[in-house]
Image 1 (tube, one colour):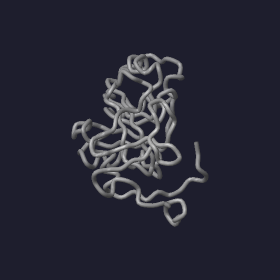
Image 2 (tube, helix red, strand yellow):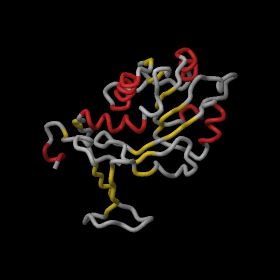
Image 3 (cartoon, helix red, strand yellow):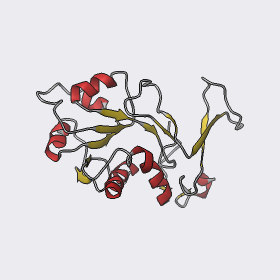
Image 4 (cartoon, one colour):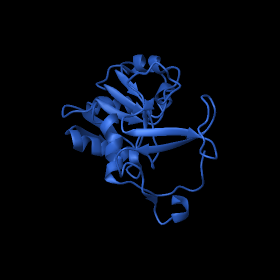
Amino acid sequence: FRSGPSKAALSPYGQIHAVLKDNYLKWLGPDDVFMSDAALFHVTGLLAIYSSLFTGAAFVRYPRFSATEYWDRIRASGATATTLSRIEFLWKQPPRPGEGRTTLRWMLTGQLPPYTAEWRKRFGVESVFTFFNMSELCAPLQSPPNPENLRTVGKVRAGAEVRLVDAHDNEVSVGEVGELLVRTDLPWEISTEYLNNPAATA
């Protein structure tokens, strides 16, 4: 689903910290190595850097994603943590000797396909988890590591409140399609505006 051309969403520091505090900071420490190949013009790449700065973890950056070089990069960097939008990119690669012998402990990914348990076993990754987020939001929904239910992006995190509503802002019944409304306990945890675009902001 796209609502038109990409828009520049202004992200306050509180919004960035809200995403980090439950999805990165509680899993990372000063002994970790965070490997990222995400673009720095996107929040995914920035969160990788910020999480390393917050925790004292080492940070290793590659300029772009490569499915064929991915595990070589993990081994070369000694990475213990990373993010990847879709783990299927690696799953579709032909098996290689030693691909499951890595230092990677956890991965934050955008999806958890039905074969996630087999994926973890094949590549030797201890924990995989996901969350629901957008450039405008603060990861209001998040999963625990290795959730049993792979059809969910998790539950509402502490400090966030969500409602699923219809076109008139009335809550929909369980199982019905709706629009997600998000509110946070703390200010500055949601994007403040679209840059130079008051109509879209409204």
